[in-house]
Structures are given as structure tokens and as C-alpha cells.
Image (cartoon, rainbow, N blue to C red):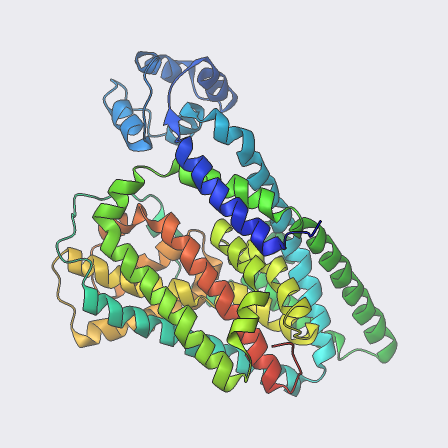
Length: 469
């Protein structure tokens, strides 16, 4: 019997997960199990007693449940809101399978740091001299900046044509917490690239710091005596080979992981129909702009600059692209991206190990495009006419923000607040786009990963490599 290709397995799992999630929507209710969860999370008994009036009620959305909480005669719920939501979450059919998604994401995240360290150090030692490293670095950064700029301009043109914010319901706003606190200045981002403690940077998943250390370490391996150089080069190459074998093992479970992740995501979405009707034009504008960038702009770069076959490369990348779409994480998808670019498209480890970890961290075409559209959409929703200079500031800020986003939690939303501040738009506007952020995140992450992979092929070709595309 012929084995079904992995990308078809993932696609089938994706479709089944959507149907499963729609069949079993999430409810919120207070029951005996809820009190056990609250006790485990150290929620005081006095607060738990205040929840008794909600027993026996079932709420179809998180918004309905939170509204019921606010009507209770106690004002201490805000402090324990996340614990109460976790305790009230009720969806047994989805809970039975969501653990597969959690396990899959944990396995991928387990691979990221050892894979980035070993691949970057191994790749840089094989690049050789500082001039070679500098040339490769400049090519990589030039590609990232150019494609991000094209993406932002595409978004800017379409949002000005469709004007999705005109007539938008400003009352349809969700509360956003902690964004201002997470903002960092450009100076802070640059300073924090240099880690005080590399082990702490690994624990905190500070990718820019880890990449900086790996590049520095790899470069200075080439400066030590030959006998030490060879030992270290062999050591990190061996670690990389082992990590790739572990990656191939984890990849086999991708369909199960995707099923668990997507089923829960769909089940947890509140009123998908209402969301599409109220924010449909905004979603369409973002998705159309992302499609133009992914289907037209990047293939043109591949075809005419990289002299590669875009369709063949796309077929090679189906597994990481579907995984990126499902997980909304270019970092978590990195092990699969590296495997596909090297094994399927034939890019050498020397190129992929340098360009892809860097790309997963700083090359955010989809995110930059989305931030530009979101900022202009918010201005339109509030009836604010942006001048040419203000729109230019949005383009430049979105470009810089997409590069700095890697160092910040909730990166996309936090960086939008930076753009809004730069042109004097109301920060509350972020709440307008929050409801559909998770859905759009799936599309923009796929574009981010697709751009990274195209960059690896283009740079490999520019270095004279013969690839499979």
C-alpha cells in the first residue's frame, strides 16, 4: 500500500481539525472540577464562594462569562481572572485531543535552541574567513530589508484602496493588557542583543542574544589554532547532525500535533460568523496583501534574482508552511524549515544554518505588512486622515519594528503600539483588531516562513551553489 505523503497527511489533519473544532465549541461553566482547579492555583476560598451563583449556568463565549463575572458583587476577580477562566474552561471532546498539540509544540521548542546554536556555529566555521561571513551577512540583511519593504508597501496600497476601517464599529473593542509595559525602545533592543548571561538568555528564549553569541563564538573558532578549530568544528557539526535526526523523528508526529492545535484554536474562537461579518473587509485586505506578497513578489525574486523555480520550491516547502499556518510560530517551525530547505531544495548547511535562524528571528515580511495595514485601519476607524508624511512614518516604523519584534513577547501587538505612538494614533485601537489577530497570525506566519526559505535559496544561488530548484 502506497504511503500518503506527509504534506497530504498534514492537510487532511487540518481539515478534520477544523470540522472537529466547529462541532465542539468551547463552553465556560463553574462546576465541582472548577473549584479543584482554583484551589490548585491558590485562589482564596472567599473568592471561590463568590462564584457559587454561576453554578448550573453554561456560557457559550468567554465574553459572556466575563460579563457574568463583572455582575457579581465582588471586585477581586480581576486579580484572579486568568485562573478563573482556566477553571471554567469546559470542552471535554477538545481536551481529549488538545494535549497532542501541546506535546508537539513543546517538542519543537525543545529543538530550537540546540538547533540554532549548533547550526549557526557549524555554519559559520564552514564559511571560513571574516570577509566571507561579512559578505553573506550583508546579502542576508539586504534581502530581509528589501522584501519587508515590498511587503509593507503592498499592504499600504491595498489598505488605502479598500479602506476597511471606514465605518468600522469602534464599540467592537477588546481590552488589551500589558502592551505598554512590554514596549522597548530601539536602544534597549540593541543593548539587549548582548546577553549578560548566555544561560539565562537560553532560559528566557532571547533569540537575538542567542544568535549574537552563536555568531561570535563561531567566528572566533576560526581564529584559534588548527587542532582546536577542527575539534570544535567537528563537535558542533556532530551536534547539528544529531539534532536534525531528532527533528526528523518529531516531524513524523506533525499531523497529530496539527490536529490537536487547530481543533482547539477553532473550538475556542468566539462567534466566527459574527467576527467575519464585522471584520471581514479588514481580514480580506490583510489576507489579500499577504497573498500578493507570497504568490507574486517573492516568486519574482526567486525567479529573476535567484534563477530558481518558485513552484518547485513551494512544493518542497509544503510541510513547514502548513505547520507554520497551524502553529502561528516561525520559531517552532524552524527545525522543519531547515530540514525542508536542505533536504528538499538542496541548499547547503553553510547557507541555511546562517540565514534561516536569523530569518526566523528578524525577517518578518508578513508581520511588517500586517502592522502597516492595522495602523492605517485604526486611523480609518477613528476617522483620522493620515498625511503622506504620516504614512511614510508608518512604513519606516513598521520596517524597523518588524526587525526588533523578535526581542519582545506578544511581538506583533506590541510593535503596533510603537507605530501608533509614532504617528499619534489612539493606542486603544489595538483592541479593534485583537479579536481576529489569532486567525490572521496563521497567514502572516506562513508568509514569514515562506520568505525565509526563499531568501535561503536566493542567497545560496548568489554564492554559486547548485540547488534542486
